[in-house]
Structures are given as C-alpha cells and as structure tokens.
Image 1 (tube, rainbow, N blue to C red):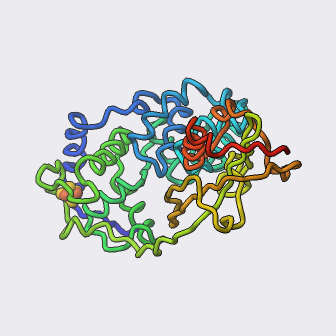
Image 2: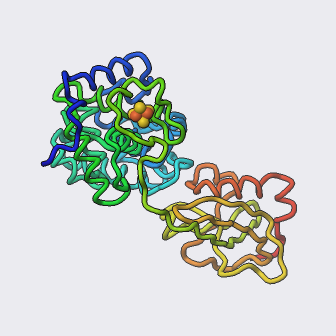
Amino acid sequence: MPNLVHPRFTQRNAFRPALLAWYSKHGRDLPWRHTRDPYAILVSEFMLQQTQVATVLSYYSEWLRRFPNFDSLAAASESDVLRAWEGLGYYARARNLHTTAKAVVSRGGTFPNSIEQMRQLPGLGRYTANAIATFAFDQPVAVVEANIARVLARLTNLQWPIDSAAGAAKVWQIASQLVPKRDAHAYNSALMDLGALVCVARQPRCPICPVRGFCHAVDPADLPRKRRLPALRLLKEHHSLTIHRGHILLEQSQDRWRGMWILPRLAAAPPRERPLYTSEFPFTHHRITLAVFRKRSVPAMPPAAQSWFPIHSVAILPLPSPHRRAVSYLLAPKAQKLCSTSAAP
Ligand code: SF4
C-alpha cells in the first residue's frame, strides 16, 4: 500500500501527541464516551449517522432508559421502536438497529468483538463496525466519518472528491496509516472533535489549530473536494384529514416511512379546494411540499392500509415528523372545528 501520509506526520511521532494534548483539554464530553458497552456505543453510532450531535444528545439517554440493552430492544415491537426514534429521521436506521438487536439475541446475546463477525450483522457497514471495534474494544482501527474525512483531506491536501469511491478509499487509506497501535479510541475521538470544533466545514480555524504545523492544505476552505450534487427536486404531496366521532383516519406507509402512520395519501389535490395545512420539508435530494385537504365524506370501508384511531391515541403511534407536525396543528381545538365532518360512515 503506497504511503499517502507525509513523513512529517510520523516524524518524531509528534502529530498524534499534539492532537491528543489538545483533545485532553478541549475534547467534547459526550455520554457515549463514558462507556465501553457495545450496545450503548452501537446506539450512538446509529443515531449519529446523518444526525447532528446536539439532536442525538436529546434522544440518547431516553433511548437507553427505555431500551437499556440488546434484550429489551429485541423484545420491543417495531411500532414502539419507531415511536421512540421519532424526530431523528431516516427510520431505516431504527429498523436496522432493531434487527441487529434481534440478531445479537438470537446468537446468544453477546456482541462479537471481531470486525468480520460484526459486519455479518444487519446494518453494520465498515464505519459502524470499526467505530465499535475502536470505541468499545479499543482496537487500533481507523474510522472515517464526515469530520475525520474533512480533517484528513485538508491535512494531506487531498484533491480527490471524498464522496467518490476512489476519494473515499484514499481517505480510509490515510486514516489507516495514521491510526496508532495504542489508545486508538482517544485518537479517533480527537480527530473527530478537531473536525467538529476547529477544522470546521466553513472557515476552518487554522490560527488556533493544534496540528497546523503538520497541515498541507493549500486552500483549506476549498477542501475537501466533493462531486457536484444533483439539483434539488421539488415535489408536492397531497394528503387528507378525516375525523369522525373522535377518531382520525391514518394510513400505514409502505415505502418512505415504512411501518409509520401518515395522513392518507391523495392521488391529486381536490379541484378548487384550498389546503387546510401546508409545510415544506427536505428529504434526500428533494424538497417536499406537504398539503393536507379536508375529506368531506367518511369512507364506509377504508382501504386495507388505512385504520381509524381514537384521537387521544395518536400520541403513542409512530408518525414521521412532517406528519406529526401537521396532525398536531390540525388537531389543535381551533383547527379541529374547521376540519371535523358530521357525515356518517
Ligand atoms: S491547519 Fe486548518 S485546515 Fe489544517 S487541519 Fe488545522 S484547521 Fe484544518
């Protein structure tokens, strides 16, 4: 494997001590850094994929209180798991975590400490398996998430787009060449925190950077290079609100929010009707406008995926955040007067 790391990084072994000295004073105090329990670390890693640390902090402790170990999570219903995850988004992560817990329990309840065996568990890719290996078992393996990729691309002035397969492979290679044989968990945490606090995406704080003497970035603000993103697509989605005798009609999503409850979909906006509620939300490369229309008639026999629920039970059902916000707004007393229908089913 060619050495992508400039000799200065390893010269007199000074790069890592500089980084670790900074980390010991300025590193973030995060709850998942106070444990070596693979379950607690796995939860944090699943939550942190595509979600900011500040948001995860408000969910993490409650999740561990509710599902303290693999056994309790494996025994929970999918509905309870999705409800507890509600607000974190990207619900496939919750389903994968649930499936992983069931797989661990069915294999005797002990989480494996070999990366090879971890990767046989559902939902555990290279990053997550390596993260557990280093943070739970202190194995000397590299981890590369967004912060670390940015730091390493700048330190080495990498000109490959880090979101291309070749660029990502280079970053992993650099990370693997730098990881120390001892205290890899502290080193990996330090690199992450450097990216989160100093080598930030916009306007990196180079003058206060503890490793600026090792940095080869010519134009740090221009790094890391990324491929051009596809243009944001605008989508309109129409849904209905039907309330009857203290019940609300909901539909169980079969696709984007599989297993969660949403307001029933409409193929198109009803002609000449104004929506009761609209909002916008992002979803991958889409910007979606959600419009909710009042349904004037009550279906005698709702389609198979739809069910009536007492309004008071909506709080315990799993609803994706855009639909939770819509339902909360529409069920507020003033809005409810506008929407309620007296038609018989
Ligand atoms: S010197 Fe600047 S670009 Fe280089 S690692 Fe530090 S903060 Fe990042």
